[in-house]
Structure formats: structure tokens, C-alpha cells
Amino acid sequence: MGRAVVSTVVRHVAEAIGPASVAHADAARALVSGAAAPMLERLAAILGGAQHAPRPRSERRLVVVAAGDHGCGDPGIAMGPDHPTIVAAHAIASGTAALSQVARASNTQIILIDAGASEARHLPSTAIALGRGPSADLARGPAMTVVDAYLALDAGIALSVSLSEPRSGDDALAVLALGAIGVGAEVASAALLGALTGTAPRGLADALAERAGESGAAMAAVAGTVSGVEALAAFGGPETGVLAGLILGAASMNVPVILDGYATGAAALVAAAIAPAVAGYLIAGHRGGFTMPAILAHLGLVPIFDVGLGHGEGTGAAMVLPLVDQVASLARRG
Image 1 (cartoon, helix red, strand yellow):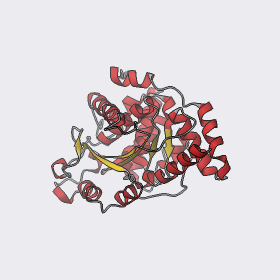
Image 2 (tube, rainbow, N blue to C red):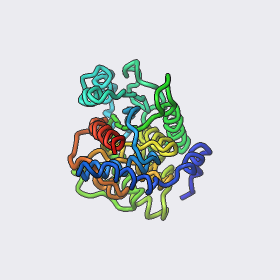
Image 3 (spheres, one colour):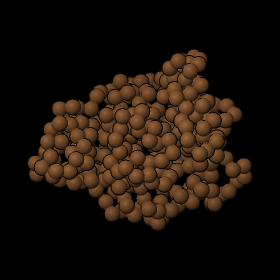
Image 4 (tube, rainbow, N blue to C red):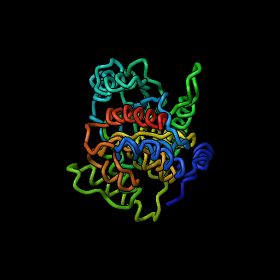
């Protein structure tokens, strides 16, 4: 298999990501140790190491939800405003979704991204259009072209830079929480897990996903080592690429990223394959279900909450934000 050449933007950003700071992680952990709460100590260490600061910041944070559909989940008919991705997006935009309520309680803004929804014209008007449409069916051929994979990564990186810049006197972005909505993401996560770990996931209770995982593992066996871009093009979706780019961009600017479900986990796999140091900037909001436990094990991440939460639209990631505030408050007093 030919080796994919990473774009100039992706290469530059990947090379800018250094390891999270062990010294700052230890200092942040020490500042909150008086609370006698191991979970907060662990979170403080991740935040301090990722932000390269002994006193973690939490003032400015965002939840970014990427909407993107996969060809393997195409229902075969145009569902218009009744498409599950569209319904979920409107629930978030209207404030009725669980994510919206959790984010509102922690005074956190939600940014909705159209990374490639199949019924994009029915998305809320507040959605930021970044996508080029849904992916193709990975069971029949490559999910995306290499060009599409690059463009999705570049779009995510550009978005991270835009969101991180201080606005109207605000502080720079301190924490980024991620979520995703879209059909077929579970199959893509299994395929990416197989391709990037070399081991097909088992026990998924989804025949298509298991076959996709086997295809990913077979690709790894043939190629020896599969790059993140190759895997993304073969098996990923539009939201996978945008979220992976967001992760890369955030890590390059010392911004920790909170993951939610398997769709965000799949993006983290891709980002870590491109820049291994990315793992030090990731926070697993919860253990999740389906492929997420195996993804976290591969990335070496211990979840904040050992529970599995629904689809992964961002609720689990947003639930960590009040704990981030506690860590920052304890560190200031420490």
C-alpha cells in the first residue's frame, strides 16, 4: 500500500505538538491533593500537563459537536428533517437536548458544526458549514478520498485556531469538549480501531461493525503500519476528520480536549496516529460503550466517569466541565 503524504498544514501542526508537561502535571496534582479526591488529582494532572501550567485554567471552554453521516448508515431514502442527525442537531440548537441542559448549567457555549451531514439543508441555521457531504459506504470501498481526508483535517485545525483566539477581552481557550452526531459512526469506529491497532474488535453485537473491524485489521496486516491519514480515508467519516483536526490543533496550542463517545474516540485514534504526543492532551469523559473501552485502552486513557452514556453527542464530555472548575478553584487556593 502506498504511503499517504501528510499535508503541509497537518505536518506543521503535528510537529508543533510536544509531550504534555510531566513537571506541570505533578505540580497541579500537588495543589489539589489536599482535597483527598483521587479523581480530581488525576484530572488536575492531565489539565496541568496539557496546559503546561501548574495552576489549570477553566474560565473559557467550549463544546463542539460535529454532525457527519457515513455512507454505511445511509437509509436509502431522503428523510429530510426527520433524519436522525437533523433531529439531534435541532434538539441541541433548541436547548432541549441533554447536552444543552448540561452545558447551560456549566455556562458553556455549544458550537454545532456541519462536517458532512447528508441532509445538511435541514440543519439549524446556527450550524457552521465545514463539510463536503457524507462519506461513501466503507463496506464497498474507501469511505473518502485522501483529498477529502486532508480537507477535513485542515478544516478542523483551522476551526481550532479560530476558536482558541481570545474574543473581546476574554481569555484564550482553556478546555475543549467534543461531541458527534451522525449515522454509521459505530461502524467507522470499529474499522478505525482495527486499522490503527491491528486487532479486530470483538463482541460488538453488530455484524457490520465487526466485519468493518476485521477489514481494518486486515488492512493493517497487509500494510504493516497504517498511517492516520490512510485509515481516515479508508474508513473514517467527515466528522472523524474534522474532530481529529480539532484535536491536533488544540494540542498544538496546549488546550486539553475532553472526549465523549466512540465517534470522538475514533477521531482521537486518528489524531494520535498522526501525532502520538496528542494522547497527553486527551481526557476521557467516561468509559462509554461499544468500541470506546478498547479505544481508551489503546490510547492509555482512564475515564473520569466509569459509565457508558448513550450516543456521544457531547453530554458525557460536558459533565466533566464542573470538575474542571473545581480543579481550577482548588489550584488557585493551593
